[in-house]
Image (tube, rainbow, N blue to C red; front, side):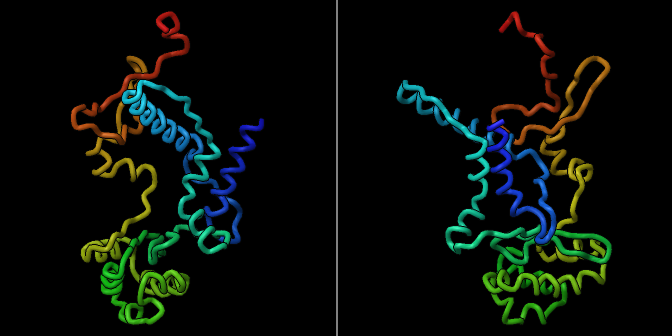
Length: 241
């Protein structure tokens, strides 16, 4: 199927920067081909409707799943054209900020995002790592990116002595963005997720109720209900349509 060939080609580009170097290709954890095409289609429809309302002229919208996969390679595409180098796999690492990735503690991994010099200073304070902070090769973000492997080794030398819970508590108190790696169950149970109504009920019938992800788009003039109607059965609305 030519269409699937194109999708696989696009996903190949994304998989080439997903995972860790010297490991087999890794699929992204969600169906980004379908999701991004749907999102871009929605944006296109909304834009066309606004234009039509102003000009009274409609248009045809053309969305390609292949195009969408290229569009979301924003950092990798810019890096390739600027540096003339093919981007490599980064694992959990951010392509342009350091330290910004997952680090191994004594018992588990934590994600740390020290996105500027101020946060890096706070991170080093929390780690009691004056040596790291005063090092010339970690003086600014550009140098930290250049020496990111060395930086990771130095940070993990300290982190491995204590539990992830210990470091999260200590670094959070200093204002450093840090978190444990939540699995799906833990993510769905986060207070912020529940408060944002991102887990809702669907009554399939009188005896069966399931939970699904909520709508991330919140409107000030619309009450976001804690339940959703079930999808119609096959041919349920044929006559009406």
